Amino acid sequence: MFIYLILAAAAILSIFPFYWMFVMASNHNSAINSLPPAFIPGAELVTNFKNVINTIEFFGAMWNSLLVSTITTIGVLFLCSLAGYAFAKLRFKGRNFLFFAILVTMMIPPQLGLIPQYIIITKLDWLNDMKAIIFPGLIDAFGIFWMRQYISSNVPDELVDAAKIDGCSHFRVYWNIAVPVVIPAFATLAIIRFMYIWNDFLWPLVVLREESSYTIQVALRGLIDNYVRDNGMIMSGTFWATVPLIIIFLLLNKLFISSLTEGAVKS
Image 1 (tube, rainbow, N blue to C red):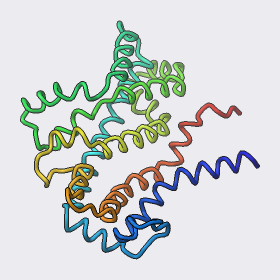
Image 2: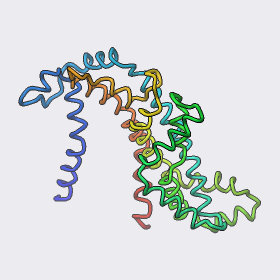
Image 3: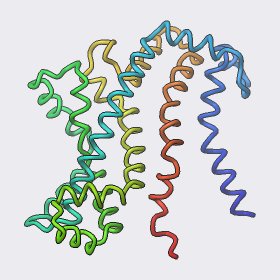
Image 4: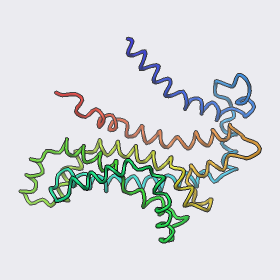
């Protein structure tokens, strides 16, 4: 019983920030700034959202984010699982050194690569282009590590050897044997990567110049006025920008939990 109480309290604490954001998004600015502030949803949700639409290109930015996040996530799933399979099942010279080198890159702050990456994008003439966000995000060190560990644990070497004896190429073994087994790992990596790209603010702010190409996180910055801050409008834009992430998580929820509990229960 005590454990259930702790879990219930943790769940309430986890949900409360989202509930509070919804309360602010559905109230007038005066109700938010009053003391004590409003704690229940108001009737200004539609009005605040209309203000968002009138201030920024909300739907265009949502489409840009959806496009970039989806393409990048699909690319990461394919490339990282392919690299993970190679490190897990292929025997080649320098395999351990290369894998160690990839792990080391996880310890380097992404901000350190900002300037070199910007110079490369400038030379490619990709500024203010979605390619500047999509291509640098197509490979991920954590994704390679995650897929390598999952494939090593869940795809038996005997199964791979049997497929090779039957004449399967390396890519066919990967596609027909490894991929169906690691679907839960795909779901987990998809959620993590989609959320990262969707919420990324710094890199899109650096390379995107025109409002028509803004992602949603960059576009939301336009809701902040230097003189008058409408918190209801800002929270309304933030609330609706969060909804796609919740939908993605709910769609992949079962596979996500399955991958995390893999091996925790033995028959």
